[in-house]
Length: 200
Image (cartoon, rainbow, N blue to C red; front, side):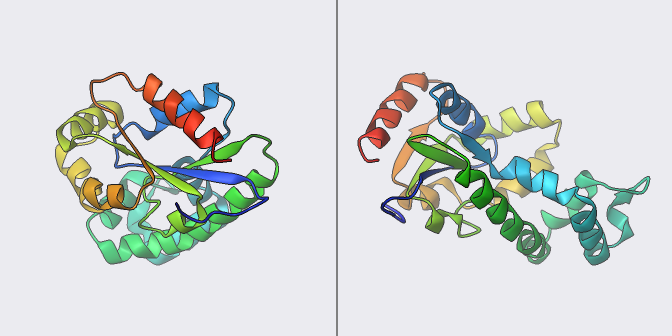
């Protein structure tokens, strides 16, 4: 168990490597009436807000600008090749994502909420969750999914994977694990949903 808090909205952190199927799992929870906060999506929105975008350009230079606008592809190429620069970017974005999550959570009404984040452990976000669900999948399948979905090169995907914790490390620190490969996952999610309801 993680940060169990009495009387407060419970939080299930959902994490997993790129292409593991976190969003698929979260979409099923949404159909069950559980609100989902996508940290990755909110992070992108924050990145492109004018003041943050300018702060990032000031730090990384005009090499990440195309036609006067921050170019996420160019930025990704830099940060996923340099862990120090990736940490710098995360230091800018993640406090703002946490603030957005806390504000969002206040307005939710459900047995629990979900915070979906690819790098939940890497940023220390797991410490603010009551439970952690890790969605796991073989690296081969993940690479196939991402190269098809995002039109990324094999090299790009491998760099992203290399900057995320390996599955076995995340699984050791998770309360629940769902494997998302070829087997049916909806029954697993439904069982997990009922298990969490019994803990709320």
